[in-house]
Image 1 (cartoon, rainbow over the protein chains, first blue to last red):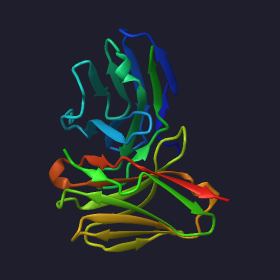
Image 2 (image 1 turned 90 degrees about the vertical axis):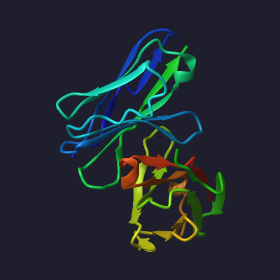
Image 3 (image 1 turned 60 degrees about the vertical axis):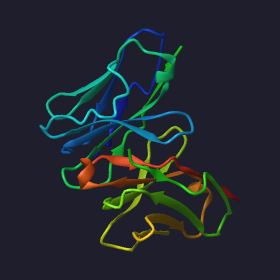
Image 4 (image 1 turned 120 degrees about the vertical axis):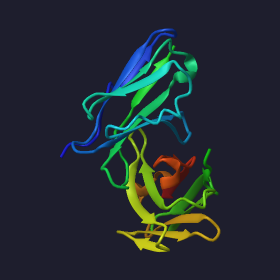
Length: 113
Length: 113
C-alpha cells in the first residue's frame, strides 16, 4: 500500500509570504504528527492529531504556524508571514490507533529567501 | 521538555564490523522506544522498537538493548554494510506525555568499504 505522501517535495518562498504544506497519511492511521528538521538537527515536534480529539499544539513555535486535519485524513500545515528561520524540512508521520511506530513521509524542504 | 540524546554524534566503522549506537533518555516514565534510520533526502525509516517490559529485542542484523536502570538504549548492527550508512535516531514515548514521540539529535554512521 501507499506510504505517507507529502507535497510539495520542495518549496521556495519569499520572506513574508504564506505557505501550505500537505500530508496524506496512510489509510486507517488515526494519529498524525508534524515535525520540523533543520539541517543536521534532530526532529522538533510541532503538532499531533489523534482521531477526533483536540490536537496537541504544544510544539508550534509561534502563532504564525497552524495546522488542520480534515475528515480525519489529509492534514495541512500553514505558515503565515514566513521568516528565514522557518527554512527546514517539514516531516509528516502517521500511525495506527495503538502505540506503534510512526511512518514518515519524505518531507517538504522549505526555503525562505 | 524531554531529553533524548546520543553519546556519539558520528561513528565510522569498517564494512563487516559490528556497529553500536547509543542513546540516553531522561524520562523514567518512557515506556516505548524506537530506532529510526534516515538517509539523505528521505524521511526516517523504522528499524526496530522495544517496550519497557523488555531488555532486548532482535531483528534482522539489528539488536536493541534497553537498560532502564541507567536510562540507556543502544542499537547494535551486525556485519555493517555500506547501505547502513545513514543518520540513526532514537525516539521515546510515554503515555504520560500524551503519546508524543521525542527524538534525539542523531548519530551519523559511515561505513568504510
